[in-house]
Length: 321
Image (cartoon, rainbow, N blue to C red; front, side, top):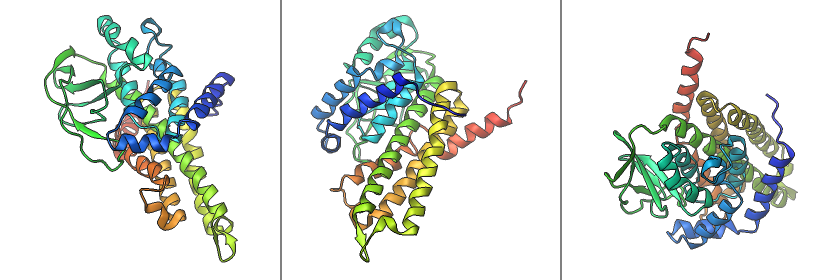
């Protein structure tokens, strides 16, 4: 599939890039990791003002969606700047809360406007950033519930992804939420976010090996280094059309394939970035670590590589016609 963004989509990506470039996201990420959410909430509001969350909300509820391709465009940029917060969860929640009308009217306008930050998780598991979210949704055996609270946040591989157990019970919002459709949207957003993380890691590593010298020459001039960077570049470029192609079809198998490709490409690029940066890449004080840990965490978010591959294989084994 040959997929090219149109002029409006490219302009949207450029506007997000300009906004996030000026936001000093490394400082925001470190604040968020410490449980200090003020700067993160301000950035969340700016992202909402740019229309990102409205893309997942139908027009009837103050949104402009659903527009999955534009969601993918936005999440690539959010990944490039490692923006913290329950981003994919908020998009998935917009799908879960679309029906019935009374539920949508109650929650979706505030979600589209960025006034609500939503997280969700299956009952009994960890929710992302439950301590920062204003709405916590729990997928219980009897349906979608509004969790009454959360336990203290637990440490995570990615410090900016704060894991919080949700309390059980709470108001039953819907006995039959569209959980499978919400999962597809969450996986699409995660795939696009991972693609952006991988692109940022590659860009940072290319810039670093051009500056770092060894044996009197830039490290980037060595053939072995060029090969590692080329492999990472190819993996990311292979994943890109899968992500946007999946956004066009929104078939669960296509989205699962895109998530696998994008997350594995980002993980491969993270390993390359760490090796080529050397010892400094291991330090939490160095900004590269903010992207390294996110690439690792996104790899298993909303479905591990094995789980996503199983979706693809089961779809191919299904009789056609």
